[in-house]
Image: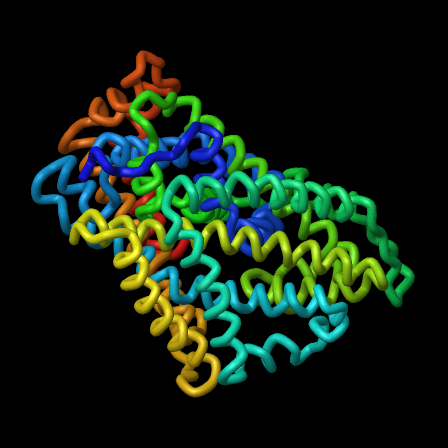
Length: 465
């Protein structure tokens, strides 16, 4: 089985695929909001420091586990150490839970992209447009099914002809769109009804310059926790993806260099996500507009911003939702691949069979998620105090509970059971010295587990800072 395992054709394909996994909805609608909320440049500074330490540790560990075992997350942990299969099961559950609601949101993105593509951007800015769409019984399911079908078609073609080939084409296009929209966001200005003129450069200043006014120790700890939580999305760790992608990396590849490139790419794109959104939202909606996050930011606030731009708004809006569609697609592909690979490794079935199984699961569960806004609608409170229905519950279970558990378990396994040298030796397999070696050992054994436990307690509402 291991001899027949596919692998990425080259380093570039692997880096683009891994980066494509990271450049998803979490970066686009969560990163800008957290940066605006947590002191702008202060959040960016903390995020970069954590990316080079905490993020580096988790990313390196998962990629090394994948390449060493040549297995996906479901079976990789037990290959590293007998008896650790339960951690692999939990790790595999994360993408199983994420995919159905991710393709549901992907369907929303497709709907908005088609709306702008047909020149109806002004309609999308209406107060009831988003709510009117997601509460329908048929159209959200249709859009979700189309989006899922796009993901399935790429997964069926495999690692080289599917994921790698698609990433090499789409990622450069996505990068050009991100840069183009970011540059445009810095050139705009707007004068509101009160005669106050705001510009994109002023919005950039709010985003990039640290704001320490009124900052307390408690506030700083919150910034650290927010930045650390964001890293799970930015680097696609603790959800089986990087272990799976690591299993496709050739033994003669320079893993150290690949890790550095992935870190750099993810950080730049995460930063540009904020440059795309914060200056534009500030220019047309002021500071209060920057308080939105999640679906309300992307599907309600930003369409109003595009509508305020006049004729250019439909073009910019179309480009933006094209970019979001590609980003959602690359991330959904990686999430589904983590599950498909796990099915293949565990049950020794072919790719088409594994893809069919996961497609049915995702489709059925995706329909249920869509129905959560109409037929199956209910409203409950999560332990964190926020109101929720089906999609939010699935997101809470996967992101707030299971992902920190997977990361904590991984740190214990590598840091204390099989020792950090297991990962270090894998990274240095081809003679290249592992950068930040001492840092890695200290992080995986001590600092990362402590930070993750604090994040878990905060995420599940047991302890609030």
